[in-house]
Structure formats: C-alpha cells, structure tokens
Length: 415
Image (cartoon, rainbow, N blue to C red):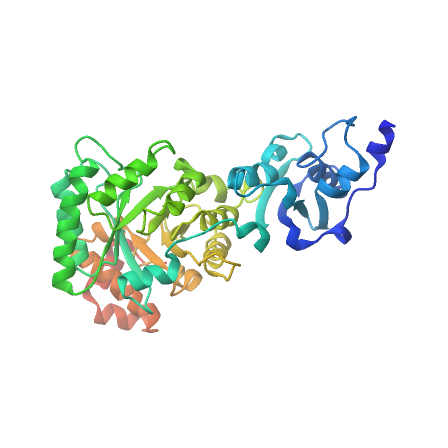
C-alpha cells in the first residue's frame, strides 16, 4: 500500500487554478536533475516528507500538494494551494514558511533562492495594505509631480533632543519633504521620544509655516510586537506625523499590526535594514523583491529599495524590480512609495533616478549633512540634482548654474 503513495503522479500545471494558488519562483542549483528537485520542493513544503508517509493519500496530494508550474534555465515555479494557508491567522509568517521554510536547509541544493511571489486577489483581499501609500503621501505633502526629497538625522546617535530639533528645523526650512531618525536611534535615555518628538515637531511646524510647505518627521519606534503599538501611541501623542519601523528587525507582523490599528493614521516608513542579507547573494536566500512585495502587503506607506553607486551592496535589477513591485497595480493593495537611499549624494543621483524614476522618495544622510557648506547647502545641492535630471539639464550646464551642486560634485565626485 505504501508504494501507492510513493508512485502517485505528481500534480502538474494542468491542474493549477491560479486564483487558488500562490506561485513561487525559485533559482535552483544542484547536481541532481531539476525535475526531481522541483518535485521534492513541492512535496516537502506541502503534504510530503523525505520518506513515504502512511497517511498521505493520493487524494490528499491532488488537493493540497504543491504543483510544478514551470521548469527552465535553473528556475522553478511552484504553485501552493491557498487552502493550506489562512491569511487571517497564519498570515505572512506562514506564507514565508510555506514558500521558503526548510528549503534553505536541504543538502539537495547547492543554492536555492526564492525570487518572487505571485499572490492572487483571493489571498491579498485579507490584507489592507498601506493606509496612505504613494498617492496619499503626495497628498499629505501637497507635492504632485516632482520626486520627494528626504534626509536622516545625523550624527546617528549622541545628539540631545534640542540638537535634533535644530537639525530638523534647518533641513525642513531648506526644502526637505521628509526627515527620519537613524535606524539605530529609537529611544535612548539622553534623547527619549517623549522629549525629542515635541521639540522636533515644534521646530518643523515653525519651518513649515515659514516656507509654506510641509515636512514629515518619521519617528523610529522599532521594538518588539509586545511594545510597538504602545511606542506608536506615545510618538503620536507627542505630535509625530509619521512613524518609522526597521521592517526586518521588528518583523513584518509588527508592521502589519501598526497598519491595521485604527488609531494610527500617520504614514508608516519602512526602513529595510539588513538589505544585504537579501541582495548580496544572487543565488541563495530570499530576494529583495519578495520582501518588497510582503512589506507592501503588510502596510508600508514608504519602503526602502536600496541604491546603486554608493555604499550599499544592491544591484540595478533589484533596485528597479523592487520599485516596480511597490508601484504596480495589485488587486486591492495601494501602491507603496519607493525609497531610494544608502550613500546617496548629488554625484550618483542621476544613476538612481534613471532606475527608480519620479514617483519616489530620495533620502540623503551624509550626502546632505556632509556638504562643505552645511545642511542648507546640502539640501539645495540635492534639489539642484533633482532639477538637473527631471528637467534634462546638461551636466556641464548644471555645474555652471548651481553652486551647491558643483561643490558637492567637487567633494564626492560623479559616477
């Protein structure tokens, strides 16, 4: 009787109803035949195991087993029945366990990487996604067409609340749309949220009134799920108009909890910490595209996609693909605003603009604060870089016309 379970025909793409399945795409390397590996992947992540099972029936396999959709050029596509996943209870953690799970541990593979997920409406309809998203953030800032510009409070750590407030005032008054805490600065005793946020918001409100615009300040509330909603309430009660979460450290479930909390109506900024874990190895692990898709599903209003030409180990294809995933039409889920950041400065802005485009937030930390003439000049240099690209101004002409831009290029160079 056991042989019946071993030899049962594996479900194929002919059986797949794509509205009832999640499609996972993998890159696979192994000395074993790809068809055998694909079958092992589909089985092990659903009904089967490494050995025949007494209670695994043919009917069970047909209904609940993963199905091979495509095999070509070291790539495998597998369809996982949505009936195996309860999006309202298992949610994103179970989705990752199902499509990744033990695959990365198996000795069958030399390398395996989960490249992307195709999630049908039947699955995504259980998620709310971003409350504001790309269009909502533009409405809040009253900026319709141009790229958005942001910065990070620098130095990363060590500043007192009053110092942070002064830095934010100068950046906001100079024309910055968005300011965020550094990813390592949450609630140190020398600069706690309850002291920092009121002082910063008072200065930002002053700058907004003086410049006639608006600046968002993303307060870093990264913490455990048991505490993060309390941190959010504290920041908002102190006047915060945006919240920031280190998505991978805090977890996608923490991001989703914040997004779905009806008392939280400010945008959620998703800082993609540890992006190199996903981008550095093109053959093994989980792709940046997967994380981008899931963070949008969980409710990130903005999300980092990396950058090129700076200090991050991210590839052109990853940056562009992630930005496209965040903005594309996707069932009931609003688009998320892509955030291009990581060693960004005027000399590499054009490289990143050519990949990410106009509907994005470009964040410079050192590329603004490190300008030889100070923060205000650093903001102006980035605004000039944006104008140079968006208005197709020749580079040599920009050097002649824009003093702050020219000084930045002299300091950091042009790639």
